[in-house]
Length: 407
Image 1: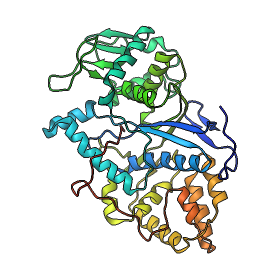
Image 2: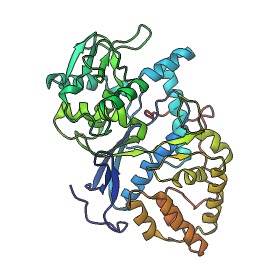
Image 3: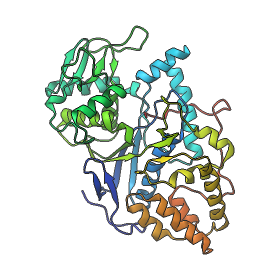
Image 4: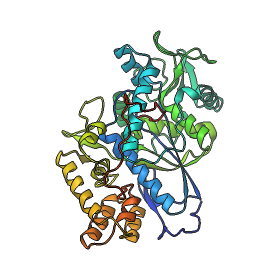
């Protein structure tokens, strides 16, 4: 597939780092670019690590649109899985009520940060019939087996397992144990086999199937939704780097096994945001919540604080980052009018989405007294108003609109 004729905003070929190829490669796509990104599980508030992931794919879409493409980005809503059921059980609430409340809070945070709306935000519970059909395809092709009331993918039947993560078997087993892969499950033929359909616990939701009542596994939801909403083969699959294994490795294997076709032409991953030396995550509790930052800072400053780091570089949160980003925003606002260094910013984004270089280009133009509004808009920073609008927070009349996914 080749790029369409260059639009006014295109200055040359676009390149991104492809996780499977393990190198920067040309991002060759047609007029319509299909993308699927994994995100949060809606059982807790949005933290800065989530924001970093979604900002990466937001800026990528903005640049692609600037180049003349249409983008269709799908982000799933994982409204049934182990994490959300566990949290709902601990709170004594219905899992869908918990999901609705957290999705509303997530949507509010994303709107405040100026994120482009997703092309589609399907819920996992809307796709149970599709998921059962997908599992049937994997079974029919000889890549899965029924055991203990569940259905498991048999990794031994898929020689390409491991090509995405580049991990050896020992490393895979360690991460599977850490990230919900349950390698000690006695129903498995191999500890690395992963669940496609599982029996539900007595207090969990369940749906009927040919293999017994139960619910979907985590990985099968994303494969099914990506193909249902977009196509058998999509242009790009993204998410946080912590999802490379097991989630994306398993997604890739079951999707190719089911259809016999490539699943994603490119895989792109956002590095981790760290705090106190560890990745920012709900399980560790070392979180900076977006909603807390928005109480004190302009949403555009939050955006700038994140975009000051390249998406492939893991970085450590420092409290001083927000003050620095707020100062940068003030400098840009003082030089708001005019196009500024559009060509340089476009070139930086085309070079593996180099947002730090793009920020430096705009900084330089602002110091020279040039207008930077159009260049800033490529990064989603709107300088046309003194302060970006803040949407209503949940509890203040905000609509409960589906959104969100897993991280």
